[in-house]
Structures are given as structure tokens and as C-alpha cells.
Image (cartoon, rainbow, N blue to C red):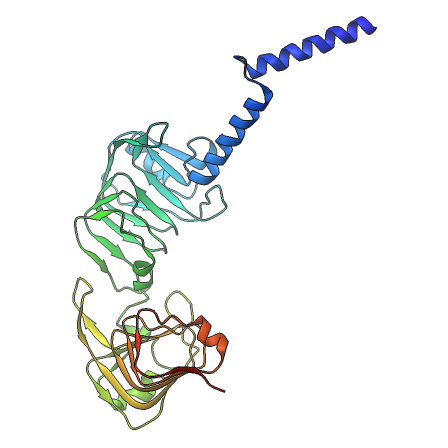
Length: 333
């Protein structure tokens, strides 16, 4: 019985050495495993298992880019399609975050890009948050309907069209290239639509009361300079088209490329901001502003007067870096 146990022990030991292979120690094997796991988590470039879909031809596109596909869509070469494509959402990466990636490239062991590919189609609609076209080219127009679209090393050979200004502002395009126009198309779901219930147009002081009330649109659009003798209130309870509470005083006009062409001034004794996520954008309010809600913003805007917050918490939540305040900024005691 003792001899049999020794034989079993020797056999088991030989099996362990064979598993390590080529003289690798158990420590070396453990380190290699940990390194691979670490690279997969940090680089999020896993190319095996349920995390990826392989695109060898146009026949693979529909399934690979659907919500049933992997979060990484890997191309093995150039692909052309006559269909309008959709990169669907609802897919999670290995960190549990919603994300999609069109990986239009190959790389070597040192992660240097070795080949870049082109996907050609009439259009691509991006429905997933944190989506990116990486290190390759999409030839056609791209419509973005989600936040945080990215273009790391990628090219869009066509127009890039955002469904809302919020989507455009959240996008990261610095590392990529777009040959066509970048614009926002106003539609039913556009957060910057300038028709319907989403907006109020201010042509004179007579329009202010209704336009800035809770019955007005979330965007208050000015057509020129306006003066009022009344103390104004920008009321809360108004939702943008993403279902978020927000108000915007749009004191400007812009061209098709979204360049500001004119800036306007709204003059009044004071303005009280009661809405969360309110902003004075690309123009001037002349008078004192009292903020009574979180996340007040001043993108390209100017307050020609004092800015007074109802609490320190409200002041800390404000975003004033892109604007200017000529008077004092204080917390009301």
C-alpha cells in the first residue's frame, strides 16, 4: 500500500511538471497568467470569448454590430455594405460598462498598429454610449445618438451628425479625423431642437415671463438684445429631450458649422435661477444673478454683475470656468 502511494505521488508530480512545460516554474506560470489578465483588464482589447465579434465580410455585420454581438467588433480586412448600419447599445465591456468598439486594425505584440481597414456603408448610426471607431476608417455618414462617442486614431470619411448638442459636447474627437461636416441635426429627440415644446423664442421683453416660466421650453432662444425692468426668474421643473431637468438661455446665433455668429445681452435688475443644470450660454446677462439650484453653468457666457449662490453647496456644484463674472461671486448669508 505504501509503495502504491509513492508511485501515485511521483506520477502526480510528473504531471505538474509537464503542465508547466519547457522548464517553466510554477511561479513563472502564475506570473504569466496574472500578466495576461492584467493586460486584458487594462487594455480592454480582448479578442477571444464573448467579448468580441469577428467581421470577415459584410455578412457578419448585422449580427456582430447588434446587441447580441461582442463589445469589440474586430475587422479582418476592408468591408463594404449596401445597408445602413447600426451599432446597437446595451453591450457591456469586461469592466461592466456599456461600450462598443469598431476595431478596424491589427496590431503586433507591442500593440503597434500594423494594418488599418476601411468599413464602407451609406451610413452608421451609433446607439451605444462610449462607442468608438478606432485606428481605421468608416466611409459614409455617422449619426451619433448616445453620449461619449470617441474617435481614437479613427477617420470618418463623411459627415458626423449628432442627435443633440449634449451628445456633441460629450464626444472626444481630438485624436481622429472627419473629412466632412460636424453638426447637430435638430429632430424630435434632439436636446437642442429649435421647434416645438423644447424651446421658447424671445423677441422682446413681452416674451420673457412665459418663456422663462415652467411652461416655457427648456431652451430659451434670444433673437436680439432684450431689456426688462422686471426681476426675472428662470423656473425649474422643465425637462430636456433626454428627460433631465435643465434650462438654457441661448443668447446667441450660430452658422451651420456651429460657429457663434452673434451674441446678445439680456438686461434686467436681477435673474433668479431655480432650475438645476441651468446655463447662460454665449451671451451676457447684465444684472445680478441669484442661483438656487445645483450645477449652474456659464459656457461662453458673461454675467455683468454679481453672482450670488443660495448655499455653499450650490456654489461648489457650479461650472464657471468657461465664462466670466465681472462682479463679486459670493454665498448669500
